[in-house]
Image (cartoon, rainbow, N blue to C red):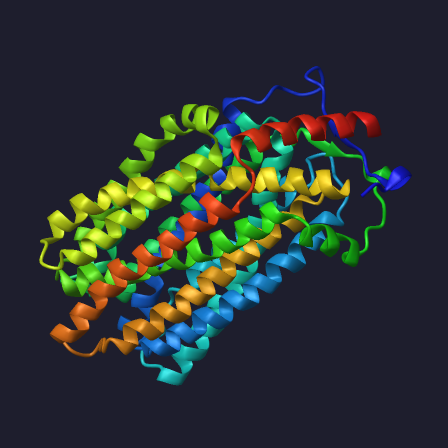
Length: 469
């Protein structure tokens, strides 16, 4: 597809005008997801147990809330992505200013989710949960969409983009380490969720999140600049036509959606798995510590592995390893909590490798979209990925709540029945094994951008840009 004179110009700011890509960019990009995940991981891991054990909401009703809220967020992501793509680039960039503007209301809404007003009715708590959770999710889009889109304009180099993805993964892991290790210690008193401790923890995480967002804004630079004066009026139908031809995007969205269902389901069920099945909620701290350690081990390995084998190749290998480990855990129901965690660490290393490179897939897909259509639509493409993530979260939230309820979980009893405990174990092992195996098949045999094709894409796209400019 050739748009002739309507092609908008994409340029790279010269080294003489702005500093080169370096450690400040990597640290700043790390801080962005560090800030995001103070609430994203917090809510993924502990919001359901807050709703069931503090608000005393029915697990199936909570699952319905998660389903509705995430589907709404998916629409918000697409809407905000299109909005961002229609904005002109300012002196501070196209994406960074939105992180600065919207992070404060986002964090405030996150704290409000964990406010319990004593003595209210079940209907009030249900309505309060719906309003505050949906508000937080909507505001999350206003920060996360520009943050994720920004990676493709910080650098055009595939290896540097992989580095950004790795540092983003490290940021998420650091947040996960803090939340995962200290969360169970702060949130539970005598193995029970405590409302005041939840609110205190949310406030602490909110302050830390704001500091991280400001660091992300201050340290990063947008180097790929779009000439807005040459930008054509692009019809939505034109964008959709290009997206429908983008096979890497389609396969990636399928795989990402299923992976998010698995990942979010694991996060939801793990709390019940350790709190009830192993009768040791604080063992979650060790799980999350090991998860962070596996990322720290994997991070220095990612760049040389990607350089040698490619993103698709090492991501697929990590997914297969994780699927095998979860299936093994299903076959070993009588493990102690410590034995379970020891084996689980190997699986966490597998999907940790996948998480470290997943954001680099998005930047490749943005480039492929430009190669196909001559349109540079970072926000739209990224928002589609975020859409898939939100749908995955919606499905996982709906399934997770319904499944916890279906196996008979009752927050009002002191101990769950053995059938309920067995059901929780199956939800935490066999189901992730199946889902991760499906994701492996999608990436290994469906996703087309192998190492060779990605390298060629970079060359071909640079040639097209030179011809336009």
